[in-house]
Length: 206
Image 1 (tube, rainbow, N blue to C red):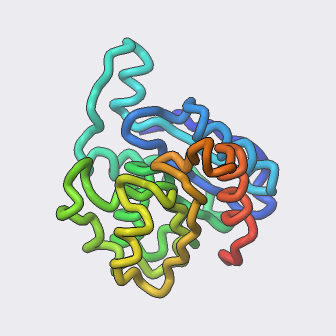
Image 2 (cartoon, rainbow, N blue to C red):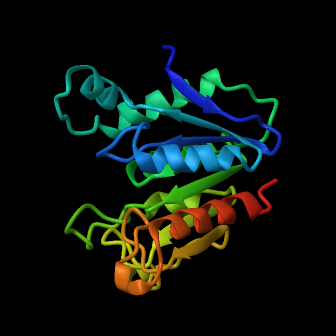
């Protein structure tokens, strides 16, 4: 099945495929900002919508995300449309990053690196149900960009986890699940987004 892709930039530094989170699609301000600015750093940035989000955008009806197997299959369809002539990073925001991480664990050579932005370490309000079992199966370099106040896994939780050595954690200062800081922190949302983009583009992935 052919998936509609939104592509920006050239692949001078490689390609990045980013999947959206559960509540907002590829047209969200966060996804558009990240794609646009990563493209300006020499990456070809590629966005797409999962099937349930495509339906939502057509009829305006809110739907929950599809089950993981369907999301995984859709992400694999995206990968099948992308050439393998350039280095490739995969990842996404929240749920999208989780699906990318599951692919990375199952297929160790599917990409050259993994970007997780606001990884949902547990379901909402259920910190005891950790989504970390598959992380040890990921062998490629991983950049975890996490808000310090992320209710799905902030500093208090992540500091207790024994993440694999190939995981690099970049903390978004006073950031929430979308990396947004509080006004009293003295930081702005743009500063946190730009810091995340710098962390991605300056990392030695390849």
